Each structure stands twice: as structure tokens, then as C-alpha cells.
Amino acid sequence: MLLKMLRLIQSGKFQTHQDIAAALAVPPGLVIIMAEQLVQQGYLQLISSCMDEEMIGGTCDNCSSHAGCFFASALQGWLLTERGKNLALSFAS
Image 1 (tube, one colour):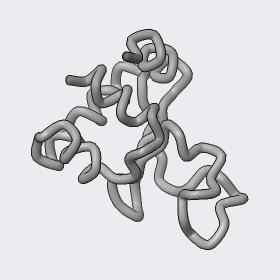
Image 2 (image 1 turned 180 degrees about the vertical axis):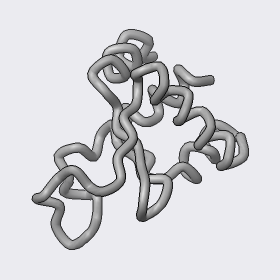
Image 3 (image 1 turned 45 degrees about the vertical axis):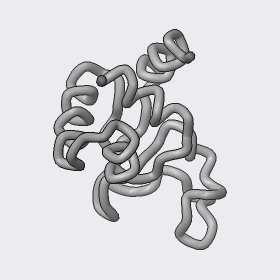
Image 4 (image 1 turned 90 degrees about the vertical axis):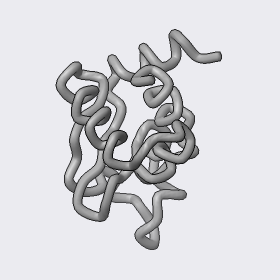
């Protein structure tokens, strides 16, 4: 399920942990636990604010990091590391 979560994040179609939870059919709290595990394994990086200074209008649509990033809340989110991107892409279906 962790690999599936990485692939979902890599797709860039999911912006919140609730979106990921719905796609995986699991509770949102489990997605946060899974994300923390992926951080410990080096596949995700915890971020506390948007890393793209060119983000326009406070949305993620124009963000260069949009693919591979999702925010759990306005205060915290996760970004795929290179290791996470490589793993997600190596098992892409």
C-alpha cells in the first residue's frame, strides 16, 4: 500500500491526505501514518510551507513541485524525494 501511495503522489493528481485516503479507501489518519513511515524511509520529505516561491494566487496549480507534492493541511505536507520518485516510477503501471 505504501508503494501505491507513492505512485498516487507521483501522479500529481492528489493535493491532500484526504484525496489520497479516498483513492486508497483508508482513513485519512492512516495516510498521515503512512507518510511518516515514508519520511523515515527516505521516500518523502516533510515540508512545513510551500517550497515554490512562484506559486501564484495561493494555489498549487502553477507550482513547479505540484507533481509529487501533497499537503495534509495548511501547516504541513510532504514532497517526494528523488528516491521516492525513482521507486514510484520504477513500479508505474
